[in-house]
Figure 1 (tube, rainbow, N blue to C red):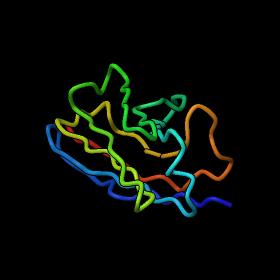
Figure 2 (figure 1 turned 135 degrees about the horizontal axis):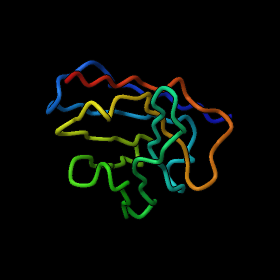
Figure 3 (figure 1 turned 90 degrees about the horizontal axis):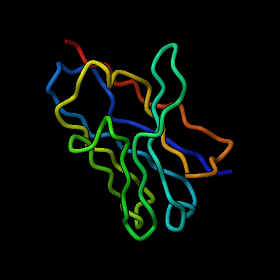
Amino acid sequence: QVRLVESGGGLVPAGGSLRLSCAASGSIFKIATVAWYRRAPGKQRELVARITSGGSTTYADSVKGRFTISRDSAKNTVYLQMNNLKPEDTAAYYCNTWPGVLDAWGQGTQVTVSS
């Protein structure tokens, strides 16, 4: 079973930056489109960004120009560089495949942006 481990979250002031990492066991990240999702309290899960095996990227309108998704297939790791963070970015962030998700979600990493 694939195991996903997210890290890199924290508490930052508005305008700050964080870099999230998602490491996967096995080799699925070498071939799959991988996405970052987030869930804020009281809200549904939201797709933030995704990256194909070939490196093509897509972003939610709310993060375009501020977030950058990248991947290191050799390390089975996907990253999310988040700049100019806003309080509305506060959420638990998760990685998984896209469009179909793996059953085994990771524990996520909490991002909290203070105003």
